Image (cartoon, rainbow, N blue to C red):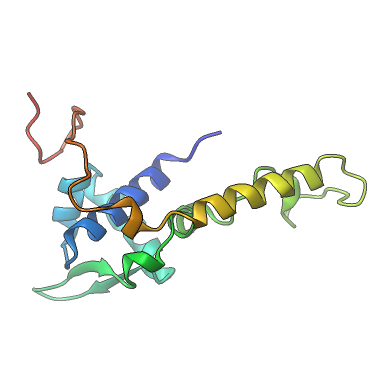
Length: 148
């Protein structure tokens, strides 16, 4: 199991907004996170719709966190992009599974609850402590950081 690329990008975007602590335009966010600008805009729309990020129009427009980073969890960002965390499709209503006789339903629900609870323990304030970011050592296309 792994998170999607879109979710990885969403986490990077919220991290960048947390670290910066002020409004950033989409181009700056894209450059600092190595996320293609069109993809960043798509993700930002989801984050805005879920109340994690606030958008501003006009010449001094851009994006900033809608809440303090102490109140934004890793789970919220992941679920903003992917929807509710579930380890199996049988946990959702859209899949026809006999929840009463499915041998795995209770196990999957327990595991999903544990993962959700653990993700809720990580706030972006805790994740983004000042000065703890390792230098970027990836050769990512469009990254504003110069790599040697």
